[in-house]
Amino acid sequence: MSLMSRRYSVADPAEAIELCFEKGWTDGLPVVPPTEERVRAMLDAARLRPGDQVAYIAHRAVSVTAEKVAINAVMAGCRPEYMPVVAAAVEGIGEPVWSYHGPGTSTAGAAVLTVVNGPIARELDINAGDNLFGPGWRANATIGRAVRLVMRNVCGSRPGALDRGTLGHPGKLSYVIAENEAESPWTPLHVERGFRPEQSTVTVMAAEAPHQFYNQLSNTAEGVLTTLADDMRISGNVMGQPQYMLVIAGEHMRTIAKDGWTKADIRRFVFEHTKNSHAHLRRTHRMAGPVKPGDETLMRPLVESPDDILVVAAGGRAGAFSAYIPGWGSKRSSQAVTKEVKR
Image (cartoon, rainbow, N blue to C red; front, side, top):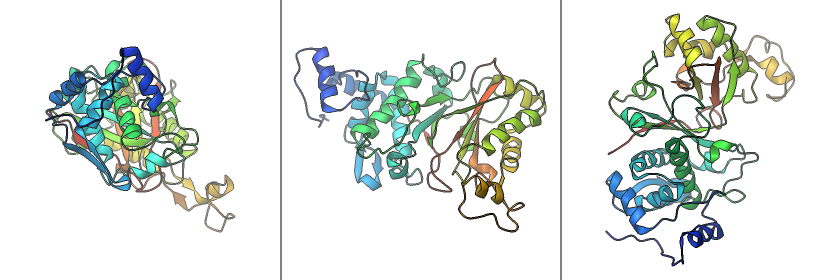
């Protein structure tokens, strides 16, 4: 099938890059010119035809075709073998429960946090370890960048226009990690969410930036998680986020696992120990109105249930640091979605 996108004639690659800047197709960084040969290589790697619909963004009435995804994957610097992961992530943000319009337009400035599980994470060398959220891995950087370019160029989420983020955060350039399944003592995220271990998946979550916490003093699961819960409890967003993700790195992972705690145990403990009294929320102007009788003992959880806390084992083997990541919005406004990577 022929490609349907408009073609531009340029003298050389440098002019092509400048054209992309002029047209507003970049995220502020240079892009790879999307030639027909490169775009077709992307499509072939994912066994997609140009006109196949990867996602439908209902609030925007936009059909995201495989050709458009492939073009933006090329521009982002992806290798063809990354295309199935990009397509699965785009499919995920098109799901109604992900609720594209909110994360794509909100002043809260959410990014698309993508967690890759299964064999493909290892095959593509998607980083699950040191410098987890930092630079240095082509797969992590370009897959996340491709998703954001699709949001910008196909769905219209451009800063100052549809994207009204007050501050935003660096994850809006790229926000991709893998779970460290090789060293984790726990059930992988995708298996908890209904997939088989041998399946490859992406989980996409509308998310704020990582909030790092530190605990080098405790050698027990309860001690580490008490520090985590205390940090979460007084963070800025304590009025009922839809979900949180906990990213437990090597030292903390080993400490918690040594005590025999499972991911379910982590979820239950954190859920119970991150509640705030209505009195505290009113005094700190997070809840409207004066303190009323009974507010000192009336408690509000961060999320509706322990199942709204996603736990991922990832990060460096050394260093007493882990992180929590608040989801975007409140209550059920946007839910994480897990999709199989089809190859």
